[in-house]
Each structure stands twice: as C-alpha cells, then as structure tokens.
Length: 329
Length: 168
Image 1 (cartoon, rainbow over the protein chains, first blue to last red):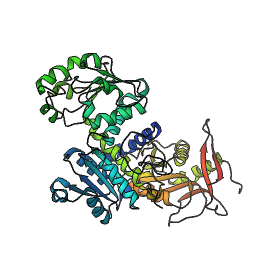
Image 2 (image 1 turned 135 degrees about the horizontal axis):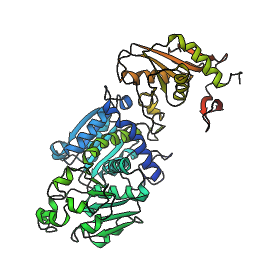
Image 3 (image 1 turned 90 degrees about the vertical axis):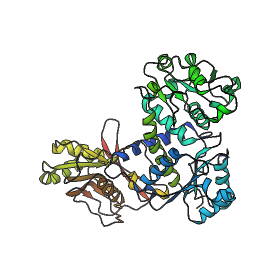
Image 4 (image 1 turned 45 degrees about the vertical axis):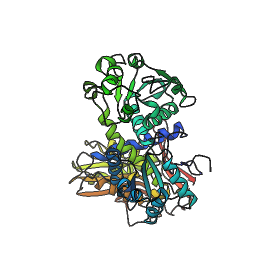
C-alpha cells in the first residue's frame, strides 16, 4: 500500500475519492481518456460496451438531481446497469448504518458505488471497509462528500479549461465565492495547483474568506483578494461558485442582493478580465446572486459545455476504474 | 525471422490485389494505429477520392476488465460520413487473433449498417482465436509466430514503415 487508497500497487486508479494526491500525469491521463468519449454522444448508437454487465449503484445520502443524473447517463452510455438509491428516503431513515447499507448492496453483486454524502470522508470509509473485507474489486467514486471534495466536478472543470486554453502553466485563474466551505472549490484548487497554474486568486468577502485561506492547499500559488474587480483583472479563467443558501442564515452574509452588489459577476467586472476569458459555474446557478444573467448567457460562458464534458469525464473515470482489477487477484 | 519483403513492396502487392475490387462506392477504414498508416498508403496508391476513415477499437475490446482497454489516449474514431449501405474495406497492419477485427466491426456498426465489409491486411501472423479471415493479405507467415512474440508495424520520423519483432 502506498498510502493513497485510490491507487493500487501499480499506481493505477481503483477508486476516485479526491484529486488531492493524484499526480499531474494522472490528471492529464484522465482528461486524455475523456476526449474520445465526447464523440460517443454524437453516434447513432450512444453506447459503448465497456461496463456491460456491471452494476453501478448511485448512493446518494444527500440530494442532488443533476450530479446523480450525469453519473447515471455516463454509466448507461458505458452499458452498465444503474441502480439509484436515495438513501434519505430509505434504510438510513430507518436507522441502518452506512457500512451495513454498503454490505447489503455488495451482497447484491455491486461493481461500483457512486457516493454522495453530507459527511466529509464517507467515501473513504466505504473504500477502506471494502478493502478490509476483501472486496477491493468494488470501486468507489466520490460524487461529493461534505466540505471535502467533488473530484469529478474538479476534473470536468479542468477538462473545460484545457479544451479552451490548452496550457495550464501560463494561466491566471480567479475563483469567486464561498471557497472555504466549498468541496467543488477544494477539488478545483488541488487540480489547478497540480496542473501547474501559476496564479490562482481566491475572491470573496472577508467573512467567508479569511486571509488564512491562502494556505488551504499547501504549496499552491494562492492569493486571497476581497475585491472582485481587482481579482478578475487580467484573468484567463473565472470560476464562479454557487452561493449556498445556508450561508445566508449564519449571519456571514447580509442578503443575496448585497452579495451580488459586491461579488456578483457582472459584464462590467468580467470586462476587466482578458477579452477571451472564459466563465465557469458548477451549477445550479443563482442568477442575480453570484452571476449576472447577461454573463451566464454570454459568449464567454462555458457553463453548458461543462455539463456535456462532465458526462465524458465521468465515463472516462468509471471505465478506468472498471478496467483495473482492484489489485485483488 | 522468416524473410519478409520490405513494407513498400507489401503495400504494392496489396494495392494490386485490391484494385479490381474498388468501386466509386468503396471506402477505406484504417484501424488505429498501424492500420491507419497502411490505409493511408493504400488510399494514395489506389487513388480513392472519398476521404480515409479510421476506427479506434478501445471501446469494444474484450479484455477491458483485464486491464487491456483504453491504453492509448487521444485516439478517436473518424468513421465514414455515411456507413449505411457503404462498401467498407477495413485495413490493418497485422492479422493475429482476430479480436481487434471483431472489435472494429462492432465499432463500425455503432455508426450504421454497411452493405459489405472486407478486410485487407499486410501480414497474417497466424494464431487466430476467432473465425475471422482476411479478404486480401499481402503476406502470410509460413509458420505462425509464438504468442510470446510481438510483431508490430512502426513508423520512423521520416514516415518510413517497417515491421519489428520482439519478445513481449
């Protein structure tokens, strides 16, 4: 064991739990493999048989229609059988423990778990439990855990940036919003740093983004900025984040309108970025809160391509995992 | 190694074999990677007007779960414009187990229903594991190569093609 539970003895990916600790080579490898999958959607038969006969269980302990749907589409285009479980409304509500649920589904011959959980580390716990009980052939994909990570979102953002900007090593990237509490941002920042982006700016109000945030990823070239106009100036990529409604309740922010006034991405502010800058958003968008409708629908927005690329990236991840034996044999 | 003629000579032989079968409706489809190089040479030699197509078999390999799939990144199928009703000639460098050809046919049928599919290869090394045969073959090795040996077409920086034999 090399300390990273995502990799087998030969360094191949057996689970995708976090982008932290994956090498630049591995990230590019995943993005490279995603490329041919973008063409699958344009075929007469939108399916390839790489996961034929495999059972993929979507374990969503937290609601997310969009993420669950894109994983479902990706698995179905790989010819897998997909079983969706909304645990909110099932056994967990009756008091069954996480690992009991996993054991039961494993006994139903699951080949892969796609896990969304409100607690950070839940997918790790599942992967460890499977390894400890000799079921390393079952793969785990983290579809978002607590405030920790959302690796496929981070990967699809990297795919989108690479698609439009080619070379990461000369980019200025601005990330705007509630970065400290965002699993999406955390995965993005790990990937951006690993891929060699030299200038990463974290932008948000002081209440959400204290100066220490610059050290949230060790050795990453992060700079904290509390002024959006200053932060996006000269940027090649502007990554907006969804403002979680619950942030409003904790007195960290006055109101959505106030937030928009200072941190909403408007055409005027975007005009300070490079003329060919692209705008990303992980969805679902709050128009008029973190992003102005004109920007969201404008020529610089690549928000819908992100969704399309997201399916290809998830197909690549799932087929890579299924292509390894998990080191069990 | 059995005395194998140089690759340009093998390509000339294959061009001569194919010529009577080529009609205006014929489309060449090279199988990544070596088959594409051969198909390019045939395409030029036969003077076919329709653009050359290519097929990548990664999505249909039968050894994916054994770690054999998706090895080469960034290869994308460029299938013919219209597969339905077309006469397709699949082109590969080496015919061995037949599994690549099966995968290529599966991939082709994801795009439509061709009227006829033929197979042209430079060298048949023996060792078939499926009931697949080439329609045209420039050279058949008199003794099948053992499974422990790899036999691949290579392209040098100047574009020159040659076969290399090695231990796996």
